[in-house]
Image (cartoon, rainbow, N blue to C red; front, side):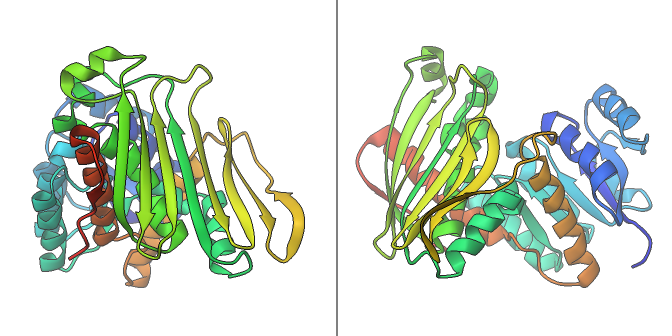
Length: 342
């Protein structure tokens, strides 16, 4: 395939708008070939910002249009399965925002639909594509830092989402909507499966979240299959903006990602004990946009090279399983085993 890959975007909301702009400006070899949203006005406004591609009122209309080679799904989580099944039936490769769905049954159905149709299904865990996280993974995989033994990650947002979205039946709640990124990182950076969790949560800052069954802050303890441990901290009440940080302590050193509101990597130990190396940072690029753009480029390149995608439906299910176990522990108390991958 030498002509640009035509990507159809489904969903013209916040995440869809970011994806549209990045595909339009930062993904060589691809073009935004259409935007579908039930809100015609939102689709038209977004299209005007990204080269004015055709707009459609439904996924079915988008898939029936010429020039659509693959789809990027950025609708609400509760509609992901429907969109995946439609795209798979049309023979289109799929990049879907996390999570694949809000239940194991629907998640498995989404993976099965792609497998039956023989199409690619990539899950939108953009942190795996961020340069600092990629370097952290490479450092740990090199063996120079020894065996990873302790994982620590946090994600703090400045405020909670609207109650209509915070409702776990709509978004999965704090564990799925926010925590799933940290749980995926835990598996990926530690190169191990999480087998057990114990979660605590509260509604100190935003008690109204309790009316829909969610919390504004939580801590999740993790136990890995090989005996390593970890923690994930989540909150929706910072006074200084979004804060995402990760640290892995290994037997011969440590790696870090995150410096308050900036994504920046660092490492200590390894082949140079006692030293601390801090990676360069370009603050002109908004946070995580490198990862989102690289994620789309990786998806396009996998199609062009006719190879599997790097972040699979199975990866999406595994992170979702940790989030589900954490949510159960939060509600019922005590330690909860993570459902193993099929």
